Image (cartoon, rainbow over all chains, first blue to last red; front, side):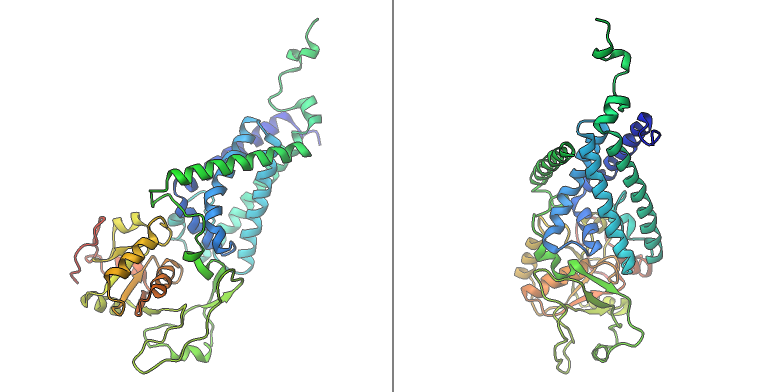
Length: 170
Length: 223
């Protein structure tokens, strides 16, 4: 259990989690109509919410990713990204279940994905689900390892005990 | 547990501010701007999935013209703010059988004939794809570039004859729904003969590589 709350594991998880979501938001912010196309292609979002999702979701990824990376609101960021991963897993899983090939759009544009055949799309969806599951585990690790108790003990990015005011020579 | 929730709410607030500012800052840029509500453009298709064609088509399929392949069925999962697929309307001799949400599909041969007859062509792909190559004479009207999408539809409505045929294409009409979204808008404003080129630009590129115009201008129709 102590390994799961290991400070270096949390640092690595924060870097990977924040970095992946910052990276994945870049093409969505650069081309919102393309991301709207991706959201539309999922066939899950009501028509009047597609653009709202396409406008705001990339910025949620940016803000939560930055929170996890910088440590300013790390637990809130990790909680948000965990919920986002669950959302992605649900959306991809439901489309796999009903046989609707979907371009994930996680790391690439719609234009790049539309050249794939249906079989390739289904395979890519399974791969993206595995990736989302991995990211969910990272988000949970960051969330639970960054509790107050762990911050008091071996919190990530915490100053070494020798430099804390409590242990400083009086 | 309260602190992470407060942090999450702060992240949501920052997200709302950044998204709103970014979208408003791009309000003049059709390549980046999205209106808040796109329901008029997406319509019922937003939650309607394509299912594979049936092995034994229902009787209604027999009324299709020979050039119209048995299209994929549609299964309405939910239809917020719209109506589901309507029953096919009665057809008169010589008229194209079209339901309000279905459009006649044409193959390459018919598309070439329409090009010879100076029919209006519409490219429903993204502008950058259009500029990289399009059917000569085609206009660029992409339903996802919504800053000027309805303006382009209204301009076409003002300039074109409503009874004149229009051919729309995108990447591949089996997968690419952009053609259908443009076709629905054109039907809504009153165009009577709207067709979709089934093969889309990939087939055109493969079969007619010499008949491709590039750049922002439609180019000359010279089949």
